[in-house]
Image (cartoon, rainbow, N blue to C red):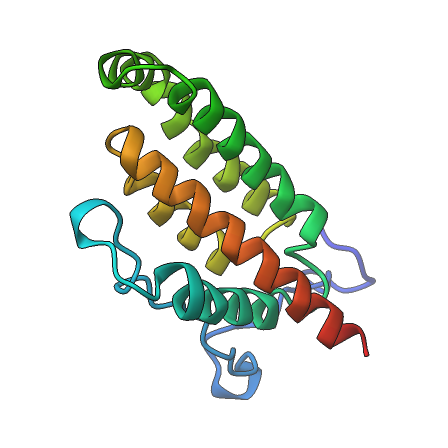
Amino acid sequence: MSNGPHPGSGSRTPDTRSPYNARPMQTPAPTIDLSDIRFGADLKELTFADVAQDKARVVAETGAGERNKSTQLRKFYDELVMWHEKVNLARSDAERTERYREAAPFIKMMIAKVTYARGRKHVDDCFEKLFTHVVRQIRCPTTLKHAKLFMEAFMGFYKAEEKTKEK
């Protein structure tokens, strides 16, 4: 069956194997180095300062004003704060440990939520990788506190970066 007056003269898709139909080169996907984010005993002095500021700058640059809106990122931070409060407001270490054990599956579920947000183009690959790395570092009430503090610092620096980009 054809679309034109001659047999086989219908619309054709271009031959993508031809060098003349080559697609324009794509720029490589932005990357973010996460090797300097470690919680627990490996926590470094500048994690909540220089490291968080650097990650905020990278995520602000890669979002290009289309993704990574601070209101969207804030939702992830707010959920992390909620889990931190549920776990760390307990009076004893034993109670905090038990609360963490109960909450751990739901804390780790935030990885699925950030992946879904990336799929919906609300956040970019760099923020997804950052937040996933932060959540994977959570292993106990102390590392949950470190993750919350890191994201708190990140959000403060990110808001400043966002304001700078608006000018």
